[in-house]
Image 1: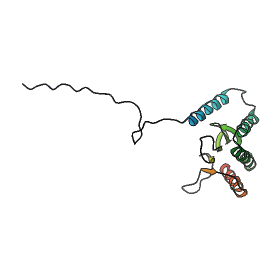
Image 2 (image 1 turned 90 degrees about the vertical axis):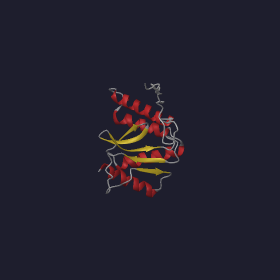
Image 3 (image 1 turned 60 degrees about the vertical axis):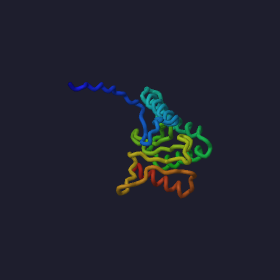
Image 4 (image 1 turned 45 degrees about the horizontal axis):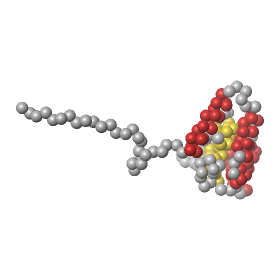
Length: 165
């Protein structure tokens, strides 16, 4: 008679996710979680009837967010706000993930991310897929900003105009 082999016990592996090099994934950063909370609050606020005083209320929220930024980012954000408003008066200021953003028909076209938002070394002017900046098969949708020169301001004004055309 053939001997019966003992059954092997199956061990279950941990469900913990790992990266390619075997380190455990840490998930979202504190800054990313804060941005998600801000976006959830924005969506709740938008859903409440009478929660905003229209465009003026949203612009006030953007201006308050800019005023709360550290000095270099605040000055740059305020200047960008003026450039965007002058270049595309049809865009509506609003907060988007806690960042100043500018929307057309409720859809964000461009936004300003201050350097402190995610603790980066530069601020960012970004454009969404709603911006019509298409140029061939590849075009930039984000710009790193350390300071604004007159030439930079003119280029930003032209980009914003093109984005909403």
